[in-house]
Length: 225
Ligand SMILES: [Zn+2]
Image (tube, rainbow, N blue to C red):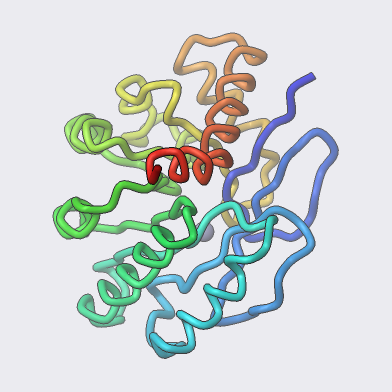
């Protein structure tokens, strides 16, 4: 039986039948977790570590086989951190991800133009977490090859994602709970429902996406030859 994948959660708890990617906030803790995880400096806390410190910490994590992705990192125009500092820290993650051959989990709030500009020259897998964009934005992002991690917004029938989900290729979707206590199964159920897919087929598709991301290193290495 295929597992569920919770692609982005801030809770350390694990659950039978669920592959969990714990998101570690590097301004709070820097030790390497004993489970699959992502690690980054959140844009809300972009001023809490210097670029040199962050670079050193990311290098440390880069050697862990449990590290699935860098991030969450990104841009948030609603928080008080200067956008230039957020951009510098975001680009530091992107540059490090290229070197480490890792995907990047992105938090983006009201900064889509800047995001599209900054990421233009990076050919690494990038996952937009907690995604809730319009159909038009989604179409632009799909063209640029982003992955989309869908969270609890899908449970509110008035959310943009409930419509936009049908504009995302199945090969680009993940599910997550972020800081919610809801089981990831409820997200799968809702997304699968909108996509009119059988749950087993949807689970398998997400597993395939995950395997593709985890094999990213090999693809890069092959391209480098
Ligand atoms: Zn998060």
